[in-house]
Length: 189
Image 1 (cartoon, one colour):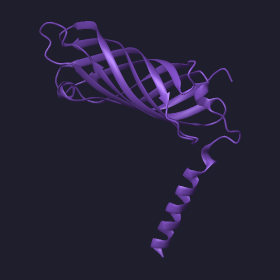
Image 2 (cartoon, helix red, strand yellow):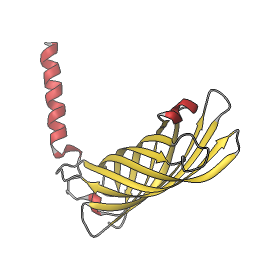
Image 3 (cartoon, helix red, strand yellow):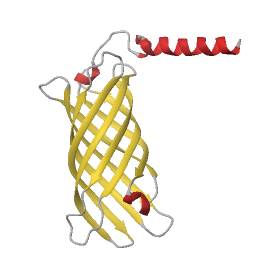
Image 4 (cartoon, helix red, strand yellow):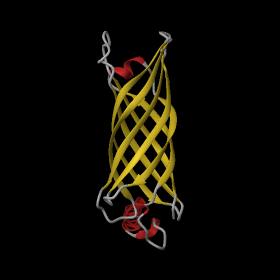
């Protein structure tokens, strides 16, 4: 009996995900609208950066605008990220970058987006008292779905590469993975 309930539950979930249950009654492509948004979630230093500081919870904001080619969008992102360690080390990173978003051509209420971009990051290291702007590159993935006419909800995963080895004496670059829940406001509707 438990096994039959289990299969019925799985079948129900698959049916709901494969239909337009989570979409607005009037189907519209919200990727074509300019968007403002915020995100919040864990930011994780990885590779050599993770040896020095610990994971933290932070967030940021973004703006996105349409370009002439429909599956593409231009975005501008920024966030604030402060990392502490078990010792006295602290790292503050404020990335500011532009990116190009590409919506995968999948006909579902959920939008899958790939993104890549570049910019700069203000990096402050304590207790050394060092603060400077470094070049930054990013790669990311997002998924989102409409939660009404004005709002989209989503999930994002971004990899930030902070290039620091161009500085004489610098031993390593910075590597951070941002994951978070996003809230988009569709504007111009």
